[in-house]
Amino acid sequence: MKCNEAFSAIEHHLTSLSYKQAWKLKGEAVMQPLVLKMEEQEEVYDEFEGIKLIWSLRKTVSNSKAMALRNRQRKLYINCTSHRDNDKQSDWSHVIFDHPASFETIAMDPIQKKEIVDDFTAFGKAKEYYARMGKPWKRGYLLYGPPGTGKSTLVAAIANFLRCDIYDIELTSVPSNAELRKLLIGIRSKSVVVIEGIDCSLDLTSQRKTISKSVKGEDENDAVNSVQEQVKLFAAAVGKSEGKTSKALIRRRRMDMHIELPYCGFEGFKVSAKNYLSVESHFLFAIIRQLLQETNITPADVAENLMPKVIDEDVETSLLRLVKVLRTSKERQG
Image 1: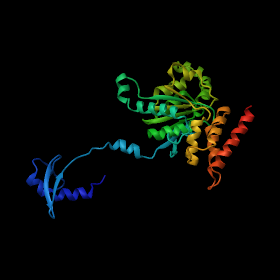
Image 2 (image 1 turned 135 degrees about the horizontal axis):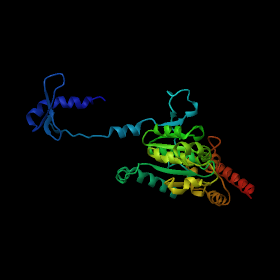
Image 3 (image 1 turned 45 degrees about the vertical axis):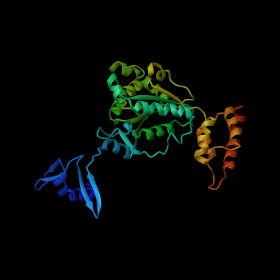
């Protein structure tokens, strides 16, 4: 932190005027005799080359912690429990997180997108409410849908929207529930915790059932319980199955909000068309709308076919390529 040079020069210039005019002064002793300066809200009058000036001291206190949090480089943490050689090595390794995903560019139905953003916004303002209710300030989201529907991209968009680090937990590399809890304790506040393929990982948890119950009396859903109990702020559990979710995740409010990411619809296509082709309407849109209703294609496949293959490729060529893929997919799906 450095003092602004212009402010220091003005303060020095106003020293004598402050003595004569100000009703209230502030004294500072910094390795020299006492220095008297203008106090906050005081005003002194000055004149420079015939121009009359009024000087007034005003203070603006900024939340430096919040500012630093917004501006700092965010990180993606990955658990490395199974790779540790000794207890001194960290449970987490990290890389710089610079994924560009945002809710403006993500190919999703606008209504669903608004529901998610509104939920984040409301929850972000509810810290005092949770404290008053005696509940931990955390929220769990279950993201599920076929591969390629944008679950990982949505997680990146969430982290960017909330300006949070991401902790990606691979449960299959965690040897015990004790190790899982140790991982969770090492997570910083205000973080997005992601459990990839949690529906598949529950099988691993049930394999630990006998040992866990004999030691701590824990049930077959220890992984879910541990995350819900200890996660600092947000948890996003990502299911990889074809639209199926485990009953262990659904019952007893394991997750606060379920977010299904289906195959690409027309609204999602329009977002991708705007992102990749900078176009919001075209005569081929009507054909694409009909084909999207008759076949299943992921947002990732739509984006891949919309992306121009050469720099000067025209919009119609890109759209026709997608139409061809959709028709082929429709024939294969019967």
